[in-house]
Amino acid sequence: MNIIRIDDPSDPRVAPYLNVRERDLVGREGRFVAEGKVVLNVLFAARRFEVESVLVLENRLAGMESTLALAPADLPVYVVSGAVMDAIAGFHMHRGILAIGRKGATPGVDEILGALPGRALVAVCVGISNHDNVGSIFRNAAAFGADAVVLDQSCCDPLYRKAIRVSVGAALKVPFATGGSAGELVEALARHGFEQLALSPAGKSDIRDVVRPERLALYLGTEGEGLPEALMARMTTARIRMAPGFDSLNVAAASAIALHHFSDASD
Image (cartoon, rainbow, N blue to C red; front, side, top):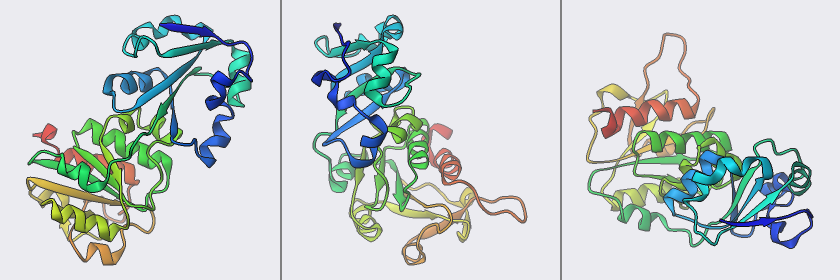
């Protein structure tokens, strides 16, 4: 391990970590922050993204040996005291384990879809701007073997720090692409031979009655408004049956049920 002690929070080598929360809001010039040991395990094991460095509390370093063994041998590992860590981050970092990754070239929707196998399951997010929900959908996609996640242009960034954390690193593992409008995603998925299913409380069929096709795109909408009616009119719709008098689930919970139902892992 390339261990480097940092005692000055203004050291330029740790500049990408400065003011974590504020910079989450304005962007990181093609970088992202991964937080926590479990997330770093996925980051290093998946090898989908280049990693610039790691920043870790001195009292956490010993417990990071197996995680850092997955990283390139020359990766800088900056070790700091609690006071220096808090000064860098701008708030108290109780986890004390961070890494800076590079987003790199973003694959397009056609590129992602063209690389999928003949039998494939894709989660399609439309208008989901809540980072917790996006992170949870990625976690569910990884858990139930979805091949990719596709997001329309109004969704939030899956590589936002909180989304990565909530996904438990799945956003660093599951292939994804952000496209244009929801209508453009419909056209792209049709080009690649996907049957498209909109999940909605107003769906015409019970999800348990829908037979899984070879290539399925499962559409998930934002809470409250759900998927636009014009979009649902272009595809088959399905609902998750619930108790009488109640017809609403958090989109993250709904995605878990639907992805499990259509997953090959549930066979």
